[in-house]
Image 1 (cartoon, rainbow, N blue to C red):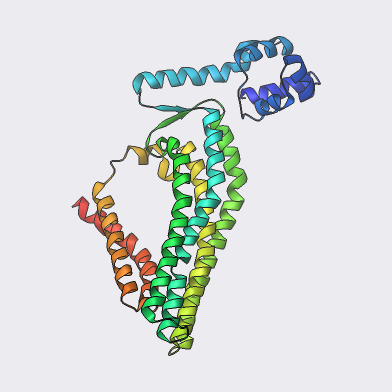
Image 2: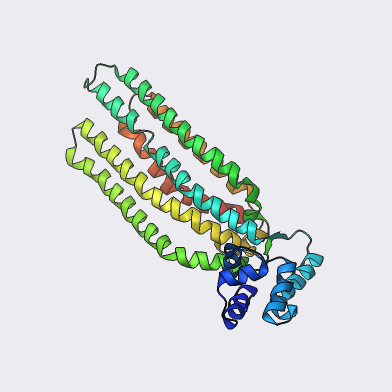
Length: 328
């Protein structure tokens, strides 16, 4: 039984409300509520006062805490590189991630939507549907694309700066202080239903986006309608990806603190492959170069829209092949 549970148990034994206990300890009711919710820890003076009020030993109240501290001390003797994460740090990290997740998800959606105006204007210009030449329409579309991407970057950069102090959670082995694991597991459990629903919804919506691409086959010969179907597919995909990114960021924050999944101790201790990273960087640079070449060729609306989904499907294959070659 952790300290939070013992405070609740002893308070109820004495028939006190949170407010009554707070008055006896000279703190606010909110402070007692946070202690009982394992969100914060009472200081030593308050623990001594509760020991007197509850008529129990200090050892009884903090026995589990002492065991954890002793364990950590022994671990630190063996490995001084282990980073400790306090309850306050964990709560702040989860707060920042929850706050930034919708913003980052929106930024990703903007990146997916960014080529739409270029496709529509380019097609309309070539088919003389607007009083602009194909090149002029394409140039305006490219400028709009760059503005949208710039807005997305303006979202990503501040978000990255806010989470930068917690980058060690991704790479370093950590030890969590008293109450952290219990708090994180409880929040993760509460979020589980939302996580599953967001993943199902996001996946279904992305599949619908793929179906929208096939809609272009029914209007073969009408180039503008083909572009319209492509843009509809991008809009639908942007909506689906937003759900996936939003759920993934929040779920990832729990996994970082609990050292699960991609952030497990086993994964952190593996030697990271610099070859895979280099190949990935070159791959996406080449894809981007091809995309830009097609955009400026005047046929962006016909072919460039397929570059990103095709590149996304092929990327895992490239990574797997690279790893297989590296092992030989």
